Length: 267
Length: 264
Image (cartoon, rainbow over all chains, first blue to last red; front, side):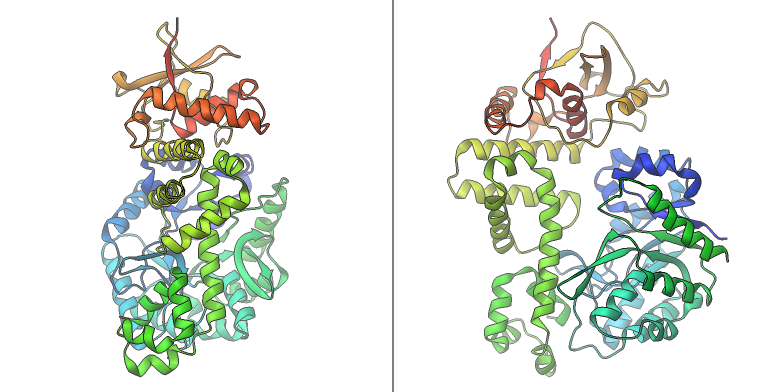
């Protein structure tokens, strides 16, 4: 079932989200914050009276050799069940490894060994939750020179072999294509788009020739083109706009972007 | 060690990056990297690694900065950034989650103390860490059913001199929550009423105890720290807290810290 067009929940824009609730179909939230501050969970319960809510976690670290933190997963799962969330999502990356907590979505070294590791970790996640799990492609801050598998092939095999849904972040596809100089349409053609459940849209910045996924800008036209291209090729359940800073004074700018995405989704 | 772990260490440890750039073989040997990967790993783009490390650092710095607004003003932004850079080199593991930001703040304090800085600077940082700690540990607003609206003659009044202006919740909204008849109080022995003198409104809240925090062992300590901050804030011209009562109240609610004084 299609969930529609939503926005990432950030407390700074709570009032605007409620004011424009008729234009927003659903919300995504970072569960990490609520795990540490479980007293704030009321906020999500309150929002769930108006919107479907889906947790988008940051620290499952499915690319980590040390495996997935089950306590963390259980906390997210428990929140998702309480909120009746349609799915849980996290990133195809590692964020901590053997005591080093990077706190940042770090690209995985794409080898056969790590592919098996990621697949096992995702399978473990899936067997421990009873709602769908989606994995998101990230912005690659760097490339391992030891990579043996292309990004598209790695993602495809992860999705197929772990039987997992894809949260396709088109801003990340755009940014990687600019920073690592590849054709984003070829990349989209190389992955199983039929597994796309959700799409992320966001605006980044170009800093000294390097694109950074800041979630702070309006969505550029090249990303809108990628959205149009993708939507022609798959049935997407939800589109989500990520905005983490530089919240516009006039929130109708954001609502316009949501409206544009909705138009593409329903057409 | 895996290539992924080595990269994680490189991204979070500037001295290791330097060592790797100068003599990669030594680092690869030291970290027991499979020799078949050496040639390829030596080709890693250190510009990208440095850039990625900077992104990690600034992401972390942004979170730390946001928790210590007064300390930054008093200590100066430039000096604060230097302190953060030092933090980055001394405590290279870069935690992300809320409790880890607390660890960052404590590490920052350790650095500051090691510098034999002005004790008032240290106090201000301690105070702001205490605010963060309490807001993280035990949010004062027990919105999921533990507060209720109450006016009686046993209010505990906020002491003047407690002031932090950054807010997340408008007072009106808080009042609405507190008025919700469904809220019940679960720990009456640990409640506090906070009065908005302007509107004569009052809210009774679950009370958390900031004074069990390591750095502040008594109300007197807290008051003394408030006094230090007050002097410095006045000196550097931050608008008077006394004109900003609502914001003070909101901030206290957000941060979960207050100084209590029986109303006479």
